[in-house]
Length: 375
Image 1 (cartoon, helix red, strand yellow):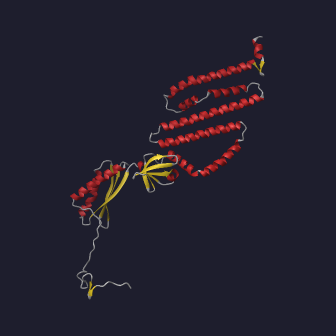
Image 2 (cartoon, rainbow, N blue to C red; image 1 turned 135 degrees about the vertical axis):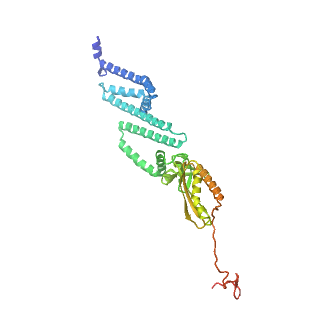
Image 3 (spheres, rainbow, N blue to C red; image 1 turned 180 degrees about the horizontal axis):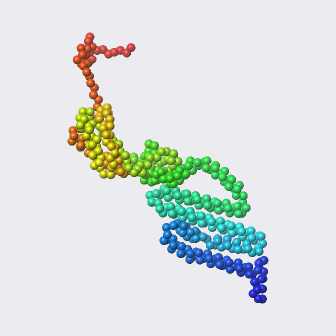
């Protein structure tokens, strides 16, 4: 038997030449896969260390996540479909190929999500632990969604009515969502806080009548440490529905204060007061003077109004600056013999005691006073 006759012999409905071509093709594909794994992967890792782009890093992750056994199943199944085989063999081969490919897609999607999460957390400060935790939960939800899609596609490949299944799951999901709508609202609010960042850990915020420093941003609640020391716990959904004042994000702090002097102060010295206030402000560091005016006539004082800016959002810096200004004003006004005003009331009685009608208190012109009787 010569070689030509051997190649033309039939085995399982196909010639030996076809079988040999199939085996050679599979060997070539396996060789290329091995080359991609051990050679190209090594070269790409070296290139990735010298580039800033993230695309090559993602490609490396996907190559490492490739399961060559699954890919081999897909390749073999596709190759065998080129042969003349019974339908009872071709059908299961196609099913196996689709399942293997779907499983590999799920593994790739899982790797891409983990790569995105690692890239996000790598650039975050360690104090931003709440944001990292929230994004890990989001990544976990995305992985569950990816594998859910894989399972549904696999069931559809087996002939299961996926439409009816999804409809049933949708109705059940609506019922569950209605039952836990408050929890879902807080979860979505946590996601909004992490993405939009109206505040972060360490910010000093005021919400309504409550104020304090943000300590933790969780999936359902945000915890704030108040100035008095107690911990205030806000629901995330309730927090986003409120007006939040974030003092940590001030570039500078505007300060307005008043001081008053007695009405007996001479006009010359009253005219000096805005200049004295201006000098007291300009004597401080990291401030910007705005204005100082003799502003108003109060009930018991002549008031001077001063406005300046502290070029720092730090509250301690503001208080140190205001204290220094107050001490300078106290010293300068004492040097000028100008007295600070305090609430007073003066009652003037004109000519009443000298009147012929005036009598000692408690007496009447006809004798001692008697108590009045209620009518």
